[in-house]
Length: 106
Image (cartoon, rainbow, N blue to C red):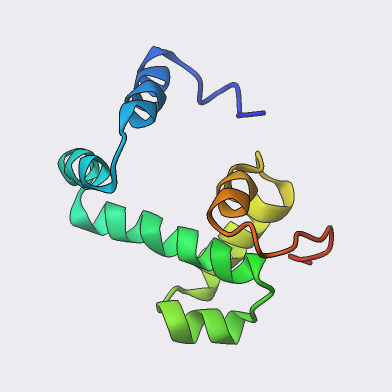
């Protein structure tokens, strides 16, 4: 369940807007307008870090492949372990072939 402190009319509107996007091109157009390039790259990097953790990859490998800091990797790992399960929800849909285990991120 999402953090109740995040929920408000504006955040609901953002979520609703995202749900309305139907294609990758529409997503690029929307996110290019709403985010800076650095913000969008950071979000994409965090998703890839989550993907690599989801696959059981090591910090060393993740740093080498993504350029992410160990602080970023730790923050993503914390979200995977104790967050709202948003990463897991998306990753299980993007990569259904990767088996989920309870101790993947420990």
